[in-house]
Amino acid sequence: MTLTVVILTKNEEHHIARSLASVAAVADTCVVVDSGSDDRTVELAEAEGAKILVHPFVTQAQQFNWAIKQLPEETEWVLRLDADEVVTSALAAEIQEVLASLPAETRGVYVSRRMFFLGRRITWGGVFPVRVLRLFRHGYGHCENRWMDEHIIVDGDTTGFSGEIVDDNLNSLSWWTEKHNSYASREVVDILNQQYKFMPQESVAKLRGGQQAGIKRWIKDNVYARLPGGLRAFAYFFYRYVLRLGFLDGKEGTAFHVLQGFWYRYLVDMKLHEVRKYLENNNVDVETAIKNVLGIDLRPRAESE
Image (cartoon, rainbow, N blue to C red; front, side, top):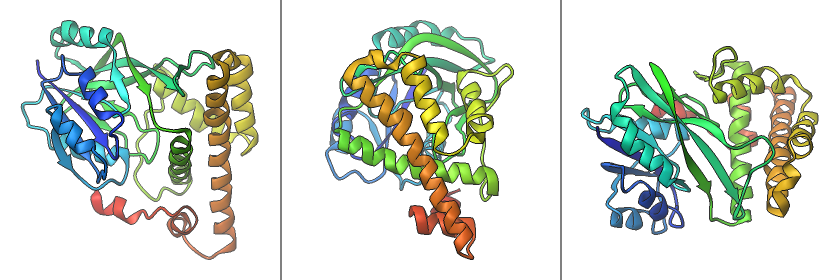
């Protein structure tokens, strides 16, 4: 059994060595796909023994799907890991002890993912741990075609490990808010695509018999999306912070639930409103509106597919 870890990077010098070190005991190969870092990301990754590929970035999904196409045919298992994530020792041990013994029809493995925010573990709010599919047999998995919140889809049976991946970003709060401002624009692209169908889009959404990610996506697409814009952000925050006791996560947790559970969701709604008003007031197609309002040009996406 061989395992290849794939990590996408852009200016991740604070995280990349830590991430690679967390999989050193289980990975036969680590592939870092960089999209133009101007810090020490590539240098540090090479020092840890990683293989470096360089490719222009459009979306996470396209970048990852391009990366797995570059892997040798003899690659057996692939682990997707973000640069600011680490594999816990418990998960590493589980990979070592169990992965090779899985039956051939098992094509993917779900693991738990937790998050730290401003140095504090987020425990309350009903958000974490979240089950995500990160391990899959090469040739049987790919990333769903979305601009945000993409998940891996596998062709075949899946199982689950109890070990965890931990997201612990070390960048500043200013970096975090700028990143999520960009994320909000990308999520609006996916929402508009559900209505206008201007590009192909896959979805893990599945209510009956689905995994956690599929059930959450179904609720988001079929329940949350039908609530009034803006108001739904308040409702979601109230659910997380009050009903699911998010206030017990302390000052850092309050910042997380307010910023990620309310501010971000409200920002998505207002950007969506902004694009729709632009469409009402100007005789343009939706892709032009997205470019003019959000600054996202969809043409590189089409050219790279």
